[in-house]
Length: 372
Image (cartoon, rainbow, N blue to C red; front, top):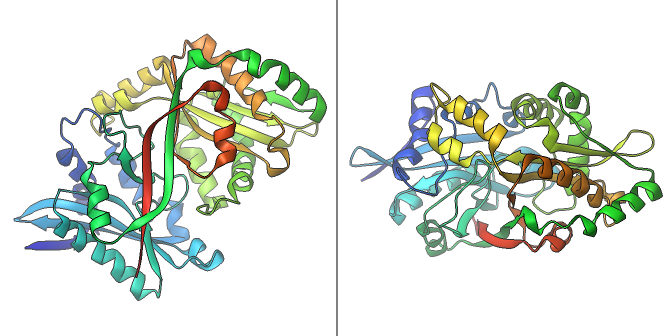
């Protein structure tokens, strides 16, 4: 018999968060999250996503053992402002038992029907800065801190239950040796002169902070036309600023400003923390923090986390300025591999800017949809 319980206390949330640690124990490619980080993400008093969303977290038990988990989420900005009558599911992990998946998803359906919503999509989080998608290819590749890993059967559970593909995401990588400065050095000099633009680099985190709100504004404008996009609110900007910016190497954040010092483009690159997180195994103490700091200083793999260009500057070569600045930093740091975070398959504009680097698609993931 399968029993579903809402994880509505700190103790139950810890069980909810720790379930994947047993499901993927000793798995070579699963990257564990930080338990404290997930607790904060699910804390309605700390995560501003709950200002515009509601979420419920469920644990499945069978024979007195935890066998699955799921989050049922409504992003009310998406429902009310975009008229997308959608209930989301995310943070879904399960043993290979489709009956457990059915029981967990029934809690998502209940939330959707209760609020007169029309369809379900997932897995996805509260916003576009959360993890997204079921992994469908690339199971033998190391995961990352900004993606979910899952076993191959997840896809088949959903498809057997009548779900259809909604969005496809690609993850690409290329060796830094593929980056030839002749492709962008002269172009970026011309672009800077033509549009009176200048790059802005940093060595100290405190110098970045005054620009972060404007960076998120550029992010919102850059991605507004994508069908899956929900804008980051002012409260969320403040939250992400405190939570993430201070942890990113300042030299890996690049801005492009116009003659009036208005931001027109940005990129955020992160060192790969995958191996460090595996060593930490969910805990910052006693040694997790050391492993993360070591990776921050020494990792030779980097992830292109976010890149954004104002619509009026898109297709004008502005990314050449960013690439030139990144090239200089990566050369100095001895970077070996560049990894891109999940990008929508139909986002041709973002794929075009990487074409000179001969990227290889090494993972695919997708969200699935079903009508209620």
